[in-house]
Length: 347
Image (cartoon, rainbow, N blue to C red; front, side, top):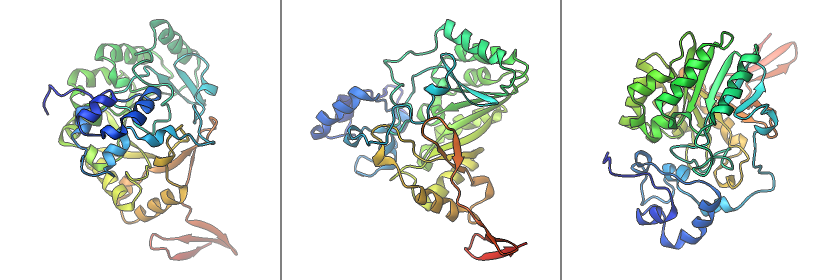
């Protein structure tokens, strides 16, 4: 990759690079006024400019459809604010918290559920005072077993800043697991340096890295090498994906994605149903589509490739699995469906 190529951060640059047409400029300027834009070279290189339905472009290139907000869409669709006792902390579940270190990302996904709160005009990182208060909250709550570093993308921060956080977490005895959510291995794989990988390790803690990837093409040679650097260092890689219309909403696309993850030592963890973020209806599928894809994969693709298909209940009520369901009650017991659709009695 040519190191001189820069991240595209505005509509003029997208027009000049051929990712959008001059005719689209006016509407897309309105989109960019409301929602952040950033298309790094690693992802820009994957887009087929001749394909109006390119699955990489659908995720990262602004679309005028983002100006259309549905009545049921919410600025905070998963209810982070209702569970934030101090700045930077979301404590929704009893044994774990989110620690939102930054509001900045290397790439801005067009379906992001935090799209109202992330972007370059937001704070680059928690202030030292806010971070100290967030860490004190974690220390004071003995029930916190896992801390999830998120944002924004925490790996946008320097190794020095990340190391300072993991060193602090290493001193908290009741925290046993540190999980890091990131797009960086696919968005800017060259940022996953040995120094950054070392900064992610926390002495005495199990460290997991949840890599957000939605299409098999995102796992380029450079992205695979970035994931290998983390896995070879002992970090456990998990896969997070979002079910997106025109990106991965077919059984074939999902099989390819999940297999590509497993081949790169990324264990599929969650397949998220699209959240009710403003201006994202054109990217959401219905739940039946997701259930059909999961049913198709069961028994036809290795169990290593099976994520949990989940919905974050709007309003901050947490995640619930969406199935599909294979079990029904019958006289004297149950009927259970196999992967070929046949039903069997089980007493």
